Amino acid sequence: MMAAKAYGLKTVFTEHSLFGYNDLTGIHLNKVIKWSFRDLDAAICVSHACKDNFVLRAKVAPQKAFTIPNAVDSNRFTPDPSIRENELAQSGNPDQINIVFISRLQYRKGFDLLIRIIPKILAQFEHVNFIIGGDGSGMVHLEELVERHNLHGRVELLGGLPHDKVRDVLCRGHIFLNTSLTESFCIAILEAACCGLLVVTTDVGGVPEVLPPHMAYLAKPDEKSILRQLRKAVVNVKNIPVDKFYSEVASIYSWRQVAERTERVYDYVMEKPVPNIMSRIKSSVSWGPLVGVWGIFYTIIETLCLWLVELMLPECDIDVVRSFNTNAYNVCPSEFGNHQVRVDAYDRADVKPSKIIDIDYESNKMKLHVFDRQNRYSTVRPTMEQVEERED
Image 1 (cartoon, rainbow, N blue to C red):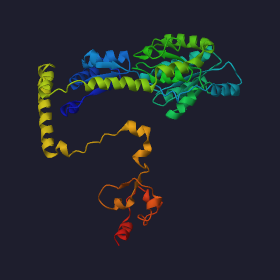
Image 2: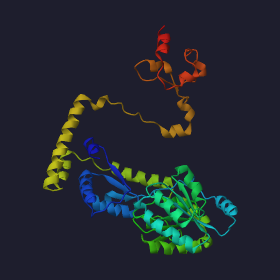
Image 3: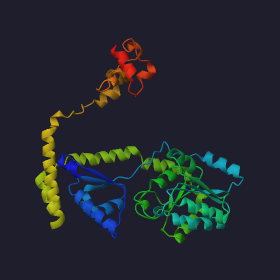
Image 4: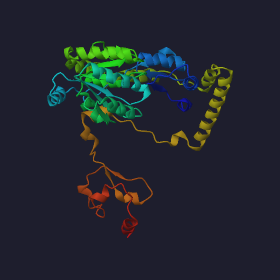
């Protein structure tokens, strides 16, 4: 961020974390953030709670911070009731309810709360099972819990899940449980609701802003409150029209809306002037006698280094990307030629860039008769025997 200002570039920072104010790490980190973001043009925060936290920590003007939530890929996370119905048919219990928990098994994700909740819920509801996906330091404790209470048939431990398997696991459940102790947004509950699950989650950070009340039961981050809301969800889940969740979530959290709102932020930034070195020095002075002096020293040294680099490597010698007429390309891509890119393996034998040929291979194979098709597309440098053969 600091180097960008020295180069005269506009700066936009995206914040998706929450940091404290009362611990030693947070105090010193916030000091660094204040000075680093002193000339920030704009910031994008994923929730209003995240924005408030960032504005207070970084001392950024509130009008420079914009709230743009995350989005969900509604084409990937689609509900599939048949997966749940098939599982219920195999179990032989049509009243069975599956509670899904997918998260890293760490303290910050409320893993210790999950350990205490599972035995009590299973003892009260005989038709409830848990499906737990994720890996971490808490996996050992979960395995011990299953062994100690003999819950092998009611708690399924999946371990770490690749992202392309998460949707299938979500579609097996009725309720999604989130026990995080801190979250700026929590996209996991968004994906769960998109797959048609009722959500029970802790009321922390920006989580209350994500889903409407009929989709999520909020609980305080303590055992009693989570148990109360989870029991309520088990009783009511069969009476809630979860099949309508998908259309609501997909319409609110689409990537197109996020892209349009982000584009407006960048348009706002482009209209702002770039601060010169004197304005940056004045900004550094405002941070106090100690940090201010260091800021002035850093800004001057940074400017001198940039000046020396400009003398050795002038900016005019840097290749500039040519503008591309995207609208014309979208109307008629064929006018821009054949896009079958071929790499000539001959050029890899010499110390020069690979030649990119925008022509068809079959019509030019007489020019490239030495190498067969496999060698032609190989990214491996030709052997010395091949080089010598070419020179002969």
